[in-house]
Image 1 (cartoon, rainbow, N blue to C red):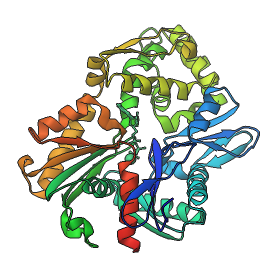
Image 2 (image 1 turned 135 degrees about the vertical axis):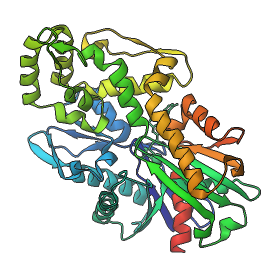
Image 3 (image 1 turned 45 degrees about the vertical axis):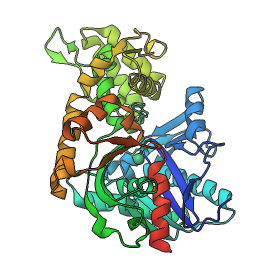
Image 4 (image 1 turned 90 degrees about the vertical axis):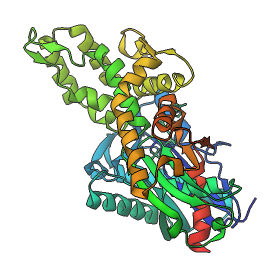
Length: 419
Ligand SMILES: Nc1ncnc2c1ncn2[C@@H]1O[C@H](COP(=O)(O)OP(=O)(O)OP(=O)(O)O)[C@@H](O)[C@H]1O
Ligand SMILES: [Mg+2]
């Protein structure tokens, strides 16, 4: 095992990684069995037992254990949700506590792997936690730093996630070039343009090599939401009428159900009572029964997982079936790649806009970019690659470890910052 002097932590919306470096290369730490990624999920059992994390958390929920699954928890940073409480068994737990439990678990895995308590860390952050709100954005980083301190880290530095990915990419370059990093994860899409080369990789200060950084709060969990609203929620009464066409079903139930980190908000007696009343008004009561079943039996995350699975399947196939019937008692609709791409239309427009904007911020034409390095799980989407091809025609696209390059780069940055 390498001597771990330097450590990086990539706390992702969907997956997290922890990496260590001895000063030259970086290695990811096994976090769950041999897996080097830990899904960013926490399951809190109703009995008050200690929470479980990652794949085990998902398995507890899918296995029908009584308790709460929380996913997409990074999305609460920078929002008012961070101090809001969610009911777990008979007590209320804040998202801050949930994040603390998760980061504490990551640190425990790291310390066990290294054999001592690691206190210095570079934590990745999106270029913007929150769009167009510098105060909320600064607050998000502050809260993350506070939580990291609470779980035992002492020297905490931050680095933009796409810069970390660039440092990892640079390990493999043979000559100087300008690289555009496109990191499309679960919660954010981040973009950086850097000058990389084997010689420059050795420099301590790289600020002159960073030509532009930008990012938007849009990622795979948003793609899941739009796909769910387009293809799943209509089967549960979304956009159907009430009172013989005079009204429409309130949208907020569907928006919550389609948004990973808001699903638990629906699980209240109040929602069930309101849905019962709405059912009498509804012009298609059978669809509202399906919605009530999902809420009553707490299948929200199962629906979200079915949507995510179809999105991922459509990266390789033309059609895929949404397996909803067990949770809704409704149909198992078929979705085509074309329908997914249609649902993603507005999101892709924003990505194209962000790509054009990062080039203009760097004052560069697309032809100046030597390579586009795409990372993050969502970079598997064919339509995203097509977007990159539209804005930067002819520029080669490289990919690496979609889920590990940011984490590995953060340990390399820790060498730079703490050596
Ligand atoms: N083949 C695929 N096609 C499309 N999407 C995919 C594929 N594989 C994974 N994803 C999506 O990638 C996202 C997770 O990516 P990743 O692990 O890079 O995010 P993250 O680092 O946790 O999030 P962030 O960096 O935004 O906080 C999920 O939304 C997942 O559904
Ligand atoms: Mg990420």
